[in-house]
Image (cartoon, rainbow, N blue to C red; front, side, top):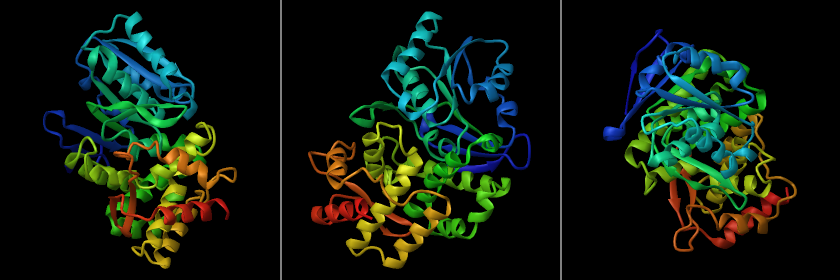
Length: 370
């Protein structure tokens, strides 16, 4: 994993995710959708762009303008986590088959995490694997879901339970897209940014504490630094453990709790980042109970989450039993044993099954009765 200046301006950065022959670049900068030469990653004569009803009117034409020498088909999905399912995945696959796309076709994901996850899974599945490109347009997708090759769709009984590890050809991050991002989605993306400080980078956590106001004002330099630093942290972990056999699982801090919230609400309540924010604080509370964190550590974490207008409590309708029923279906459950990502300190995370079940129940009960 390395970083270097590259591209259309001095502000453009390129990070390489080192995975041998499956390595790929992450390009970060202003104007990337128009200037990143998307066509260099489309080797065949055909491409399929997958986007949604919100993003396509804003950026689709800029992508198509770079692919004038290709047959480019489109699938425009409805916008929302509730549409990340097998029925909508089938819309992508049907278009590929009807338009006679072959193994040299390239899929292009233009949108947020839902579009990226579904397009990646379609690429992994179609004719047993075709190339795809990620062009993430939300902060959450730019700092997390577009990097690392996790692709999936949701099931009514669990989030991201149907999917594959499948790496893109490139990730093209245009920071200009954040200008049109609604405040709520921007703040949801900041939850994943905070996560990197919590799991592996105390200095970054301190930087976030000192730059809340600047980031909330969407200062381009501050945002660029936050995105770059988040991608660097994720690329390092993914390069060390591509298929989550070990250290990569720390990237799921708060996610076991958060996914339970999303599933309980049938993906129509809290946004993913909002649910993860609540989950990270619940993980911090359990880490406090186990003696790893101090009360002041948990206070700092809560203050930073709240400073970015993120929720700090689960939905009022959820009870401890609801969490437990859904958490036992989590992908980190091995041989019937629930594992969680907990904090040893701010900046150090561990995946462990060595926690008190009674302590977990206490934390869940406390969170659900605030």
